[in-house]
Length: 127
Image (cartoon, rainbow, N blue to C red; front, side, top):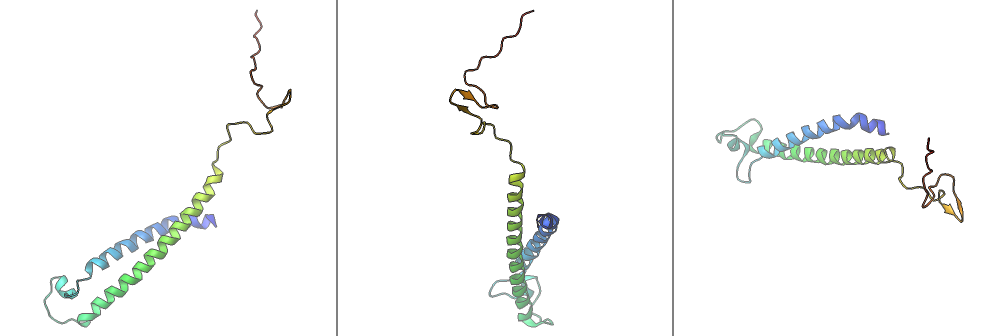
């Protein structure tokens, strides 16, 4: 499953960028309550093929569709990156720096891998 996430990472990021741009453009093309799309683009009050409400309804529906696609893609990307980061946490854990509980002083005996407390380094032989 992780391999699928890795393969889809960059295409989903590119899709998110494309959806974002289209959504921004569609929102900016929408006009206020009193204006129609023709006056927003500099046109007069002349009629068009779709009528006065057709373009506005198209932009509202298109904006809603792209907003839903944006949210779904955002959720998928968030879950994907969460899975990828959870999988990488265990893979790069360093070795512990402290000795484990089994390597300790037990009574007067020292475990094989433990460092004896107050150990004196052996003297080097003089030549």
